[in-house]
Each structure stands twice: as structure tokens, then as C-alpha cells.
Length: 378
Image (tube, rainbow, N blue to C red; front, side):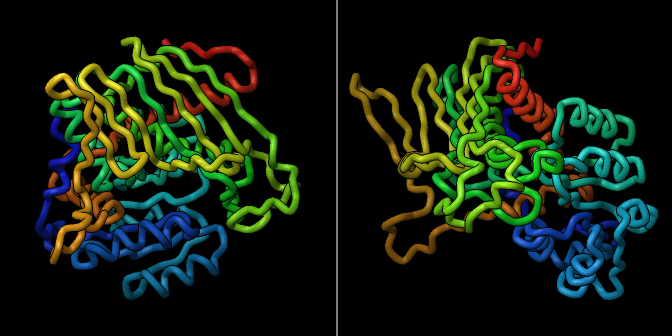
């Protein structure tokens, strides 16, 4: 893993495939495609064009084609028809979690490179089948964990790679909202999504933690999964009251993971927890030389000259006169790295084998929550 984090943000330059733009297809024309993936494509409009749009609701695909598509972009309601177009180089899979695995596998086997939205899949078996498909086809597959490319995360990853914290043996992955349950789409549908906040936002926090620890060998997982608030009304939810009849996913979940090398991770995930301590897509690392958290920007704690100290790197140039603060380019970098993997053969940063372990752990937390027993992954 060393070296595939921070330095990748320095990539520059325009690349075309056979002197033409890369041709993308979008499968799933929902909110995440609009606020994330189409922005990533737009950042490299000289290199990429979206020539096909697919959604089970044809009107949505037509709207996306008009707004984001290349001239003459095609519209489909069946992704398998889109995949028959041999001129398409790559697809973005932005559908509900239930269909990530089979759409991705079909796309790879149709000769397309794939950027699949997170989480990789609902189950470890599905994720493993996706990894196996990559090995069979030789195509590029990466998963949409764009938080890895945030400026603050990149700084911490670089510090981990230079051993600033020593052996990281204790960590916490934070994905806590007070009352911010997403009430649109199928977020509340366990069948479509596989779960609630654990698989939706907990997946980001766990991915960041494992990546910075560079540890993908879980040993044991114990979890608690709660359905405590879902039947409430007049909820005070920041995104509007949820429908109790449609809330089939958990409102909170917590997991304790031990790794084969003895390290431990505590994962907390909630859309609606009665707490003022909200943290999302953040993590805490504790090592033999020092530690880091995101409680007030990046805070590094260590010992120097026999005294405990706290360092706060000025990642966003706060208080620097005449300086333009650097922008987080996470979405753009996710798109850039996918392009480079296709056109230059560069390695992806989010490797499917890593994302598969995230799914394995999340599934084990759900299983442990149901059975009340620890799950061993050896």
C-alpha cells in the first residue's frame, strides 16, 4: 500500500483513448449520480463523454441524457441493452445496493471498465464474485469511496505511510448523525439497500480507517444493531419526517472488530442518535508513536522533549493572508483516477479487494446483531 495514497493527487494532464474521448454509460440516474458522478465527469469533459443513460424509470434517464449527455446520447430502461453497445468503454453503476454486484459483473464481462458506487455489495459473497470477475476479465473495477481523496484524509494517510504514528493498534470509525435520516429514494428499504446507516455511511468511516491502518485482515466481529426510533412520528428529522411504515432498516449500529495482528476497531454508525457528538466520515487512530483524530480539524497527539503535545497542520490555510484556501477535490480525483486506470494502466486507489473486506465486516456486524454472537472471519 505504501505510496498509493497522497502522491496520486499530483496527477496532471489530459489523456485520450485512441485520440478520442472515453465513452461512458451511466446505470442508475438518481441523486448520487447527479451530485457526485456527473460532477466528476464534467471536470474532464475534454476527455470523457456520457453516451448512454439507464434507469428503470425512463423519464429520469431521458432527463439525464438531456442535461448531461453527449449529442445523440441513448436512453435505456434495461442495463443489459446498454451493455450491448460495444463502443462504450466504461460504466458508472449508481443503482441501489442490491444490484451493485450483478450489474457490475455483467458490465465487466461485457468488456466495460466499472466505477461502482459504494458499498461494493450487500454481502461478502457478492463482493467476492465481483473480484473474481475482475480476475477473469482483466477490466478495471473501483468502488466509490471518494472520502479517501479529501485533503485532510490525504494528509493523515501520508503520515501513516511515513510511520508517524508507529504501530496503529486501536482505532474508531465514526459515522454519527443526530437526526438526519435520508427520506428519499430507497434508503429506508432493507431489501434494496441491505441495511441503513451502517451500510450507507458507516461504510465510508470503516473504509477510511482500514485504509489508513493498512490492515485488511479481520479476525472477529461483534455487533449491536438497533431499531429504536424507526416507528416514531414527529421526529424532528432535519431531512423531513420519515415514514414509519417504510422504515425497515436500523437507525443505529455498532461494531467491535479485532484484526489478526491484535489491533481493534470500534465502529459507530447512526442516522438518528440522540447525541450532540456528531461525526461523519471521520476516524481516530492510536499508535505506539502518536495518534490522530478529526475532532477540530486534524489533531495529531504525540510526545516531544518528554512533553505531551498536540499538532494541528494547517491543511486549509486558515488565517494565511492573501492565500486562497485549497479546495477538496475528492469527486474530481475519483474521476481522474478512474480515467488514468483505463487510459494509462495506473493502479486504482480503491482496490476491489479492499472494498470487499469492508463489506465482509459490515455483513458480520449485521449477522452478530441478529444472533447475539461474535462472528469469526478466519
